[in-house]
Length: 72
Image: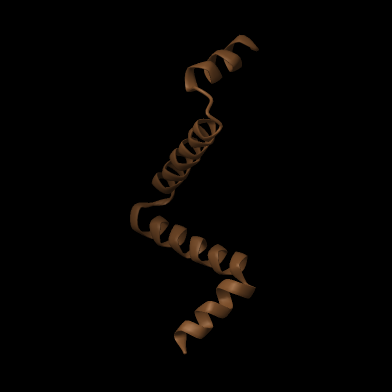
């Protein structure tokens, strides 16, 4: 029964399911370590995601920094 309900949620309501799961996890983290530490972790995660995206594009990080800093 649980497997059918979970399958239904993942097939028809994937975005809502993961949104609720993410919201729940962020709420638990805020309760455990506090708001500002959670904000710091989210910012670090976003920076890591951004740097990983640069790596996925096969662009070297130093060439990316050169491109950004020389356009300033």
